[in-house]
Structure formats: C-alpha cells, structure tokens
Image (cartoon, rainbow, N blue to C red; front, top):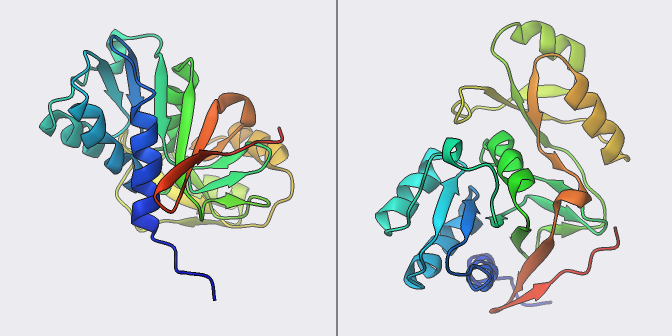
Length: 218
C-alpha cells in the first residue's frame, strides 16, 4: 500500500513556497481556508513592507495578529499577487473553490491580481471537476431561486462575509464553462465557486515536504 499522505505537511509546503513569491512593496490578496492558514506565519516572518487585502474576517484577524498590514479593499483597485487554496484543480486549470464560503470575495480578489497563485495539497488535483460547487445566494426570494436552480442544497454554515446564503450545487456536470455561465446568469445567485483557467496564474502542489508547480493543459 502507498504511504498515507500527510495533508497538513503538504499544505504547509505549498503555502511556504508561495510566501517566497511575495516581494517587498507588493499588494497582496490573502485567501481563506486551511491551506492559507499555513501561509500567514511564514509571510509575516519575512518582514516585508506589504499591503494586504483579506477575503474573510477570519483571515484578516489571523493576519493582523501576526503583524501583517491588512487594508480595506476600497483603498486598492489592483493587487500584485493573490494567494489562495482550492477544493479541486482540474488539469486544464478550472477550479472549484468555496469550501469556506468566501468564494465571491475570493474571486473578486483573484481577478484584481496580476498573478493568482493557487496552493493545494496533493489530493486536490483531479482528472475532472465534480460536485459540490459552492454558491452564494441572495436571501431575498430564496425559495424561488432554489426552485429555479434545482439540485441545490443549503449548507449548514454561517452566512458569507457579505451576508449571503451559502449553498451547494450537487448535480453532476461535464462542462464547467456551461455550468458557470448558467449559474452566473441565474437571478438570485450572487456568485459560484467555479474559477476559469484564465484567472489562474500557477498552481503549487504540496507533495510530501516539497512544493511542485502543477503543469496545466489549458
């Protein structure tokens, strides 16, 4: 039998490698989730003069406690780099994100960055994407939105950082482009957790105690 993966060690390896990509004077987008949690300490330890934007209150609190300068995104219109995790990474670069319920903010931050770096453990790359796909829904008219979408289940989770209802799309799909377009066009859907390849700069995968760049086919 193959040795059991040490997921925490792999997350740490990918996160520490991504911290080395940040340079003095940069504006930095900080994602949300268990892998990003391993990024904050090594980033703070470098003692750089950087300005950060956090995608969730949890990340903001943790970053501030470590001495990182976190600002409102209202004060910045672009970022040099954004670093975040993912729930699934397809070979062509499509991502599923949103396990932490902050995918709308995460997508805004990733889109504003000149370079979006995804950090994951070795269990996250997949041959093809599969459900669930995270959704943020408006609470206004929620029953109508759920009826129109179908195959959606509300998640037993706190609201998003902006007060949206967190849910998951559960139906199988083969074309993420088509599903992304359908979800984006649905009234009541604030945002979805499908991230397109053109948004992704690179993917760092923790394997054992090392981080490797994932070669994307897209």
